[in-house]
Length: 638
Figure 1: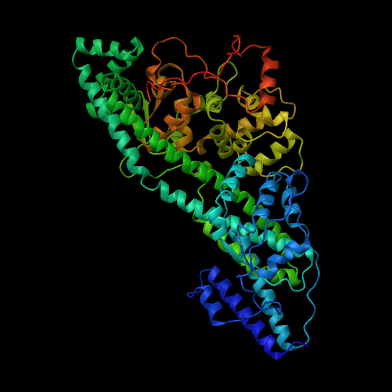
Figure 2 (figure 1 turned 60 degrees about the horizontal axis):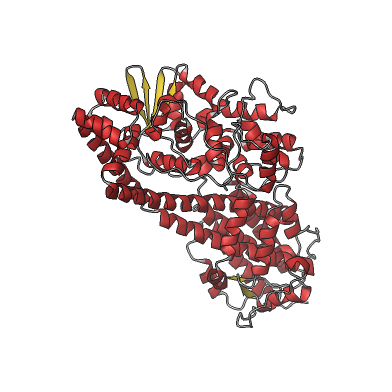
């Protein structure tokens, strides 16, 4: 029978855990470590803490196909050492990465965690044990409830399996960070081999979460100051437009300079109209004018233009790195959420030795989830930088309706104004078209992930999943994302051609989809188009390539919507140019009908073969396919 001394030490451990729960909820002022230090040598499950000075644990041997051969004796080493590093847990991190791709069905998490037996903890023999058991149950319940509430706050959107794989791959390549990341395992007393392996998996997942949170924190720090970079670029654009304005005052000299810069007759008419209707300040703040002015700047001062381009490239790369980190972090958060939900299913309303042993890890898991909430950023729902630059330049859009011109700060304001007349309906009609390329399809041709994010934002997950299950005939499918599907590796031919089938024509009135899924998707996007973010509405403006829209505007009946130079506008414009490898501004040069943007490159040989068979050896326009990759168009207007 255990001694009174052992009971008191266990009671002290539970007081420590209660303090940890209060700290997790923000109710304790002293750090958890101080509590631990005040109660030295408190064993858990009857075992004393083992020193971490033991030799490092070597990786397990590899079997056929490179799969780690993990034995019970190998796992036991971790509980003997107790304090282990992320480097020693690398084998399990690799397993998590390999299994993460099965999350669409939920099978992957079951492989990682297995099932939990509802073995009851033995009854207590005296009052002290009964009190301890009550405290234990309360602590477990509080820990799981806290974890559940934190999971409810997590980002709901998920990235693609490819984005998740790349994100985890980057974490696992940080060898020094893995070696420096330490984690303490509980005692293995009373646990079987499967339970021990599950705790090691939890420890490995905690290491990944810590590394992810550090990476997201660093990404935010690296992104700090980007506002100043973009404001400098906008100032350069305005200076170039001011020089163009002065040049246009010079009569014959202006015509000669326009010809030298390669301005078409349509370009010259556009500039004359803008100069006649706008003041110098308004003229310099017109994005279409700025694009033409930069073309003139490249011809007249190549060095200054090259300096501007260098600034654009530097800012774009910093922004893209930030977006990759946040998108990867969002994909990882779906794994963290799914893993946490599985833990809740395993441990909730059960009392056994494993749950008691796992409690410190569950507490730490909740802590890292809470920390990640403050670092994650959902670019689909919130945009890349919705508020940056807004204090200095609050307007994002300029809407002209007859003699009235409004400067509006958000896409929501724009859509509300458009819906006061026919323009709102015209915009929704243009999203999907039968006899021309719809606006979203144009975005898709140049940036599949961004087109997918538009659909994700305008079709909630609770409507998205049932439609996806019906379309793919996969009843177990969950967490479907258009952005993930469009940009990731397709699971089957039906997913491979989803983007093309969905966006290439208008399914809202008449569809060739027997299950009516494509029609439901398009109708949801149309109905909820008011929810498009600033970034997404700007993409639609720059993706449009018809008429005066080539000058960074979108004509909708008697209304004209233009982008105001801002951080969002400059980045969206440059991203669209890079994605299309062609120009999306007035520098094309003539009035001839614009040709469609180039079709996206096949993601793999399967898609290439499908396209070749479908086209019969020709492109969609009837010409023979090029023998090599298309050359990148020069940046004459960006």
